[in-house]
Length: 117
Image (cartoon, rainbow, N blue to C red):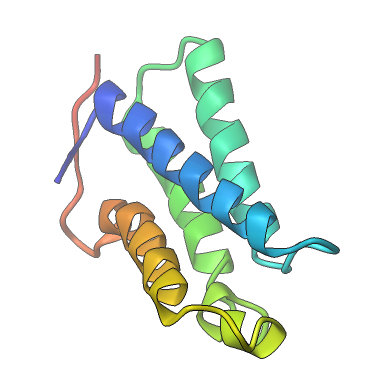
């Protein structure tokens, strides 16, 4: 996947949809991994705000946070919507998985090529 300016905007939008979903499901404290998704959005905003152009230098910061969001025992892979919401429609769980996959596609190992603007 080529990662350029447009893809960073898309990634931020995908992260926004994912974090909105999580905020909608959790009425109290956010899961630990949530902070990494929020940090990724903020870092993308900073990247554009400061006028950076070297995505190849910036993208490892996003990868670091993506990996951190998957830390054992407290990461997103251990997030069980049905544990806290036993009556939840299983379709909602699939919706969450899709939102997560939409973000994850940017971090598939060895597939990123960077396009500087």
